[in-house]
Image: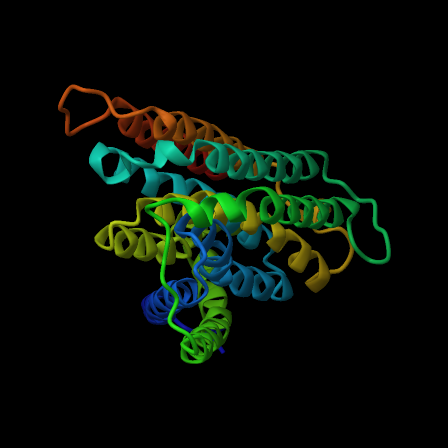
Length: 336
């Protein structure tokens, strides 16, 4: 449908479909919070699991569509670029320490979530670097391992943390009975809106990459990665307005882990190993995402100091790393 459109028309379609996804993600967030209230689940758990999956729906829909269009590098660039963009959002929150001052109390849960995201991102990056070509039953073993790691972590988290998180004083809720049907229906409708708009978003991004001459890797990492992280930004701002900083931080780190599951869906949508078709340049953005997650964890886990300060070096250093990695990716891809 966009094969013959001009750059400005393509950009208009990109913005329009992106706005639909942001609108739908906002409703997803509100529905998820209502579901959490009706079940009594803690804020951090909702952020790291339910909201992480919900706000990663744009990546899932966009990237599967991109693979089917033959733009695998656009899809991979989106996943690693989105991981960096999520940490950029965290860095902006860290500039004002008070907004995440209480998250250090969830240090155990945060450490495990970040550890999961780091392991999954590193494994995906290694497969991209080696251009793994092995296939089992039409799928790369790496994508199957990514799914296995995530499922094992989920089971462990349910067993070890759910009760403790639900007992935390700041996390307790009084669930009204019979109030879950409308939130679940709202959640489903918002998810449907994302899946309906995401194919157009992916097609517009691919067309823009062709017209600009920047290539799928650059457009995916810089433009699409940032665009599909806009739901995370919306969630974070909404959570902070509710005074639920653990919801925001849990969502950002949890989304980075869930995004790596999208490689499995991309593998199913393509032919052969998805990792064999990717540009090794993606390792740069994967490295940036892992570095930023490490910096973010250290910054969030630091207990609040007694001195008053609006700006924290940790947030500024994360922004500097983000800019440096993005510049490196742009320069590298433009020279090849």
